[in-house]
Image (cartoon, rainbow, N blue to C red; front, side, top):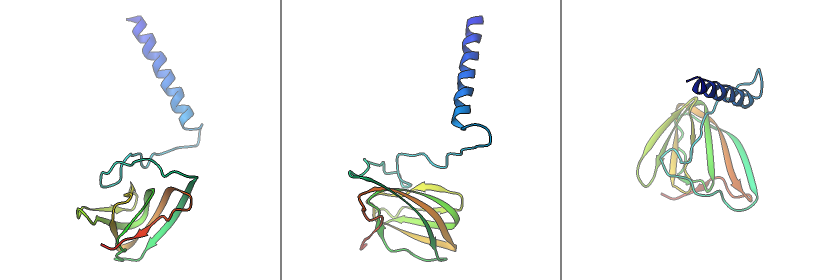
Length: 142
C-alpha cells in the first residue's frame, strides 16, 4: 500500500512539473483554441503539400450578408472568428455550418464551398500552411 502511494505521489509531481514547463513559467497562460486532423465538415487531412513551407496569416473582413463565390483551398487553413459570423456550405453535399465570434475551425481542402457573412458581417484571422507560393484560394464554377 505504501509503495502505491509513493508511486502516485511521484507521478503527481512529474505531472505538475510537466505542466509548469508547459506554461513557460509564471505570468503566461496558453489556451488551445483548436487541435484537429480534419476539416469542419469531417474530411481528414492528407499530407502537407511538397515544397518549401510557406505560412500565411490573413485578417479577413467580410461585409454584412455578403455571399462569397464558390471556391476551394489547396492547403490546410485554420480560422479564428474575431467578430460576427460566417456560414459555410459544401457544394456537393449541401452541408452547412455557421461559425460565430470566438469559434475556431479548420477549413476544407480541395472541396468546393461557399461562405456567407451574417447580419453583423464577419472578421476572422486565417492561418494557411501551404508551400511554394501556391494560391490560397481558387475560384470555382459550381
